[in-house]
Length: 483
Image (cartoon, rainbow, N blue to C red; front, side):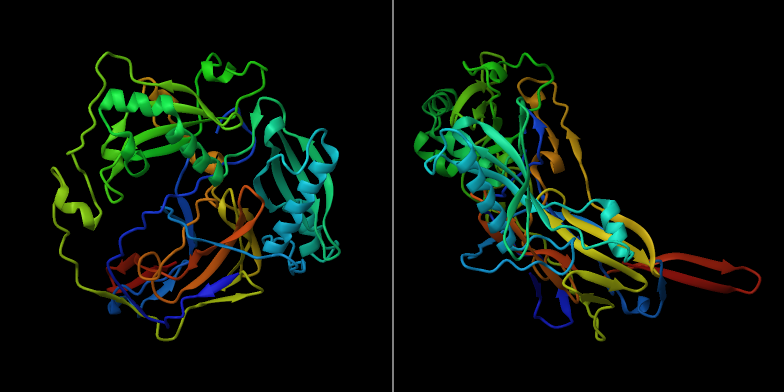
């Protein structure tokens, strides 16, 4: 599903509108042993920017493509797929369609209901993800070389029977004739599938509804529980522990592995307030299977740290005047810098997501975990790489003070950049001649939804790349960098 800007070839660079205040969804990759944080999202683009007219006459070479990140305030659109025929895409690496996701989720749910003991429609089946099961590299290489058949179209799915705490990995065959289970395996005991965005929202609901947490917050900080819905912010993170004697790991009487998620707490005076300037030292840990808070940690010491209710550190226009020490007025905007491409962009998009630009060609993909994926990148017809993506970003916060030593993030593997995908905006995130691509993902019920404009492609003129001068002839050459 793709969309263009509809605004013509030229746009003026302008001050970005205030970021949305909607909460970012989170997700994590499969098989994170025992635990699993929320992150930002991926914005993808291939770009060119005419920054000054003086540079438009340069002989711009040295093409380069890259991906960039953007903080997530995603807008999702639900998709109605009932009675929609499942059509096989034209290429084995094309992302799953909404109809394919629905068929795969329905097949998995039917299998679990029919093959699991004491499980019926009243039992919750929670999906962690439904995504394309990419064909093996050897099969793709043979297919692309015309030496092999079209690889089988398959989906990979993780689903959990919540009351039984059993999670399964499915591979589902997809085709115009319907969907069927190709393989099914139980996630090993002690391992947990990823947290979907819905899991993180559920954790927040559990914490805010917990009487013990609310009572301790009121007693420890003197805050009014009536303000919790608006002022208390819960930030769900995976639990990274250094030792296996962490008590919440062993709280269950039946000995089963708990599905743990910890919620860092913050306070805000209103929805535009920067909550990170007002941290709360209580750290609840939730077992999502049990649907309850099973542990609350806090900083050692008799005197709790004070919440700086009047210490505002804000960047939102609506709250600048309340700042304690940062500027209280927004800076004067800079003069406009026009981005124009009178002849249009240099890239061409065909077959849905095949991009040709200069001497480069590549196929774009998108999934819940990595976000943007680049397939089969070639230069002048020669293969450069088969697959490229951001596979991980580790962020060890390294705070030695308990309980915050558990704060650590594997932003790709723990949460999934695709799940955090942002809807990008013209003039704020993307400039010039834009090509947008939508992303189709699914929620914890297996229902597909669209994140509009999750990928933005444009060109950027990065200025002079290098300059060489011959001192004898006074001959010089300048080359720019076009991205």
